[in-house]
Image (cartoon, rainbow, N blue to C red):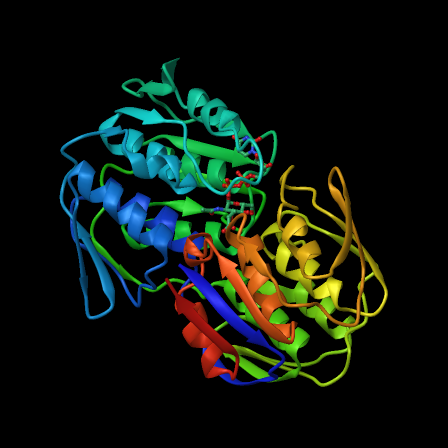
Length: 416
Ligand code: EPZ
């Protein structure tokens, strides 16, 4: 599948931001910790969500979609998470914590995910070992035994999002035991996972801060839950509006989750109005470059918006230096952008972008999820017909992307 984009249109209109992919995925894993029915409302069918559900079904969970809600129930018939889907899906590793919490034994393969770096799981395993996990690795399989677990004080060597989530889940059902997790990730999606676990009767406190305390409970019960909006998808649409020009309104989103981006967009020359649950962006002039952009863990500028922001700099007036501090290989999209006339030089974790007045249409290929989204933005501003191939990467994390952009006035079609 590919997108055909005829760039040059301004964007006008409003979008309702879908629920957050990176909140839904660990929450789906957390439903393993209870057999009762859990309902996750208004579920966007990102490809990653579909793959996560496929793994859950193969493990024995009952999964249905009813009236746009994801309904999950039942007990696992297997705790061997060894299937093709785990090789493409990083978030399959989130099941390690939830399965060990409830079933105490599991076999995993090393997870896959976007090719943006080595993506080790040492921080996950170190933390789980401190809870009492015993594991061995043979032929790329991780044999886990958590039959003897107890509460612990765990200090993460880096505020890893996935490791924070895994350890939070692994300690949830260690009945009567307290676990303290220090140097945690503070992303809004971490807070959502804690809110979900607590809605099932768990006791997780401090999520969103650098220390989380989990009081282990005996069991959890079913729940009904609606996730926060996807701040990265919202930020991507805002950058599209800034680059194309026009006026767009993003509804159902808390602007507090996107403050570093909002500052950059305002400094680039955009008018932005903020409300408690929506963001309105307006721009009708050429953007000014942001001299220095550095990705950080939350609440800093998010690595997942680095590629869209890099693309914005390729057509801004001036020079921008982008420092990617989170992942070691997140500039793969640059080679494709250069085919469109972008002036970008990459040296290790730095990209230097010299803005050009316009990009030219081209045939390009998505290297990963956020780089692919960046290529769509580039196609939207390049006057003429661009072909963006291997869009399965993009559909992993953007739901109805072409429909949404078309509703704002973009000329984009999805074709075989
Ligand atoms: C989550 O990935 C997100 N994925 C990523 O979003 C996001 O970019 C990332 O957090 C950072 O915000 C999901 O939530 C499904 P990390 P995760 O563990 O958990 C290193 C997207 O585009 N590290 O915080 O894998 C790691 O290599 C995706 O939606 C270790 O060294 O991120 C990386 O350099 C991409 N050892 C850094 O930490 C470990 O054990 C951040 O990784 C774990 C991580």
